[in-house]
Length: 334
Image (cartoon, rainbow, N blue to C red; front, side, top):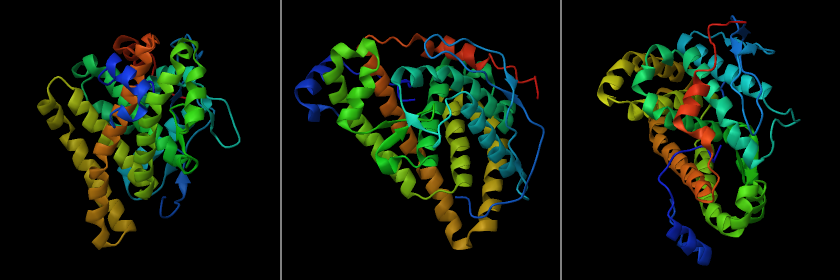
């Protein structure tokens, strides 16, 4: 969700300058389907109120995803994890024929509390919890969770293929259309923002135009669902190393997991692509990481802009997101 990210604040001078002159704001497939088998299911998240979200115990899944049945055990597990988190999120949201709907800015912002729980679910099911020391990243937990939210926005935009219609899909599977009229209407849904609406929309539109460009670059990279899952894991590892107290020790701790990940990638490419294309495709995944960082920074600038317009967003601070992260009791299995 675009308001759910941390970045350096936008100064009042920049806002005033952009109001007078908008241009002055700085620019900031899976190859083959496999037969599947059912594993044991895990716990589920509960719904929450869009304005005062309570922290709830985890209930049982109404949907049990299927474990891919390939010879690549690591890939099987992370694909299953991705599928389970996607469907868990869907249980929390209004059901629509296409899976998406127009965004309400306030509702999307408050869904970040749910995403903290879904992030915990992801790192537990993917095995990342066995590697990372949570006390080492406690002080930067909100930044990591909000980075996860940035990645999920991108994943959802590609999954629902909304960028073709100039739409950016957010963490709650809702979308905002990247046009001046839609950006204006989107911000007007929050009462706090209405008095600064024209100025806010003029500054936000160039940000979302850049986000659109980044999303199109990812779309045009033609990554398969498997590659996108590898990319998501790599981006989270990079974020956790960057935000840890001692990045050197954290990097060493992740090394065995990274060895498994790259061994799995090598096997996946060897089974599905020609030998000549393997290095190119693996390199492309690594080279796309800075683009996700750029998208995250743009979304963070948008959040800072909203805060300057007196929308405090207290539920996105470090302690509240850390509390939401720990609210999920993963020992309760369905």
